[in-house]
Length: 108
Image 1 (cartoon, rainbow, N blue to C red):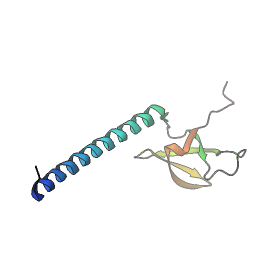
Image 2: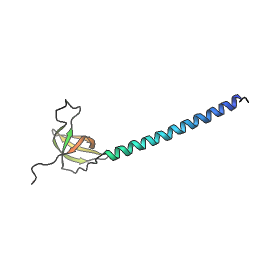
Image 3: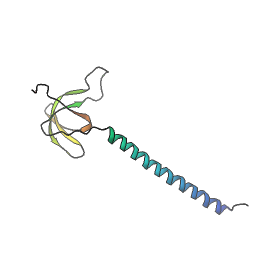
Image 4: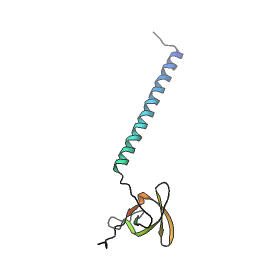
């Protein structure tokens, strides 16, 4: 039994639509898995105005060099996980993932 050209095209279009739908669903599942992994691994920081923080150096210069620069003060908490800090007298906006809380060693 031979299929006509129209039947072949209809069958081909159905198969292409099915494959595209499956690819779209797999992409959504993959994004959700990546988000769950990231959310599970992330350690959210809670900075307050006046906190001492370290700023990540970019790019790092060698294996044994300091990864973070000396403590700075938080001036303002901004939207979208950004913080305004003062670096050498100049206010600078930095994302939270570039910062680490500085612990005061002199507390007793």
